Amino acid sequence: MNLLSSFFRHQNSHPFTPFLFLQRRWKKPMISAQTRLENRVRDTHLDNLVTCMSKFRLILGIHTFMSSRKRGTFVSLQLMSRWRNILGLNVPIGSFLRKYPHIFEVFLHPVKKNLCCRVTRKMKELVLMERVVVRNNELEVVKRVKKLLMMSVNGTLRVHALRMIKRELGLPDDFRDSILGKHSDEFRLVGLEVVQLVRENGEFGVVAEVEKWRKKEYTEKWLSEFETKFAFPINLPTGFKIEKGFRERLKNWQRLPYTKPYESKEAIRVRNSGSIDRYEKRAVAVLHELLSMTVEKMVHVDNLVHFRRDFVIEVNLRELLLKHPGIFYISTKGKTQTVILREAYRKGSLIEPNPVYTTRRNMLELVLLRHRKTKQMVDFDEPSKGGNSVVCKADGGVKREGDWVIPFLESCEEKRSF
Image 1: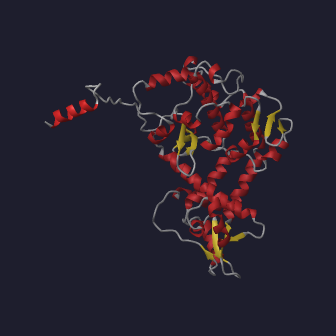
Image 2: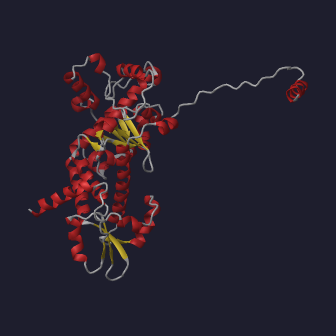
Image 3: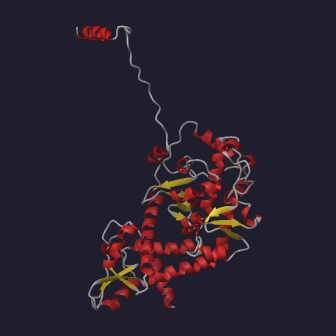
């Protein structure tokens, strides 16, 4: 009776529609960059590396603030506490500094009786060594900047874009004068914020890094030229789910021709490239080449946006990177998203290290040591038995991440003694 009464009541309310049905259609879930980012396969080695690098950059920021002060070699913790908001530090500055006694030495001022901080000798030596290595690699840095200008459509780049990734490219802090201004035969400053390429030289700029890999695949593995001419190295993460038709789509994409980064800059718009796939593949090649030039083969995704106009990349960069998980990996550890060239790393370490990377890796090892004692820390503790130095002792018998670094530092001390 209830069903019949509801039916007649419904029919009386709609006299012209005796039967009314509400049809609900099933909507296909939208695949966006955010869903790809959330559903991607995590790489624990690369995520751990990015986490350590975030702490390392924070420590370098504190060191930069301390070095900018000219009143002395130490800074009071009261003054350093004002830097928390600038550095983005969410813990008390004192507790953070005491976590890294190999980098920061917290002590009691003998006169004012307040806590102060100074940088350890080992950290100062490594920072100075990094500056020396960067200066010695000046010619290599000039080649990198020149390659970036050759990939640009108009042969120009904004200085601000280079400034955003100067550390990733191994550029010195004063690269505007020491690199761009010094090599006036290669670069020309147009106005204040635009650098232009004076002359192109195909000696090194014609061949991209992926071309070297293709040549190696063609000669050593005897693959056909048709398979390797436009291919990229693919390293799918462990646990990646291969869906139906994925291998066929990947094979077709690998064979797809495209305009290479150092080729003619004409007809690279979406409407002139033949298809959106070819245009996106050129964008992948440009990003692959840019990451190959960096010291650590990684860049913040937000910093890549500054190159979109000069490289004519008219697509969503993050979505493009997530569409190719075998080439790029985006880590969300830290405050910003970081894109890493997957082929350059194996278990969190760079396969082909360079001098700048090696020096920075030594500084990163000091970060990983945390409270662990070495001969270096014993030397620091001996003159401070009077109670002016506040150095935390290690927890005995407990193994943590970074224990493998201790023999490395001890060998450095032994070599220095000779």
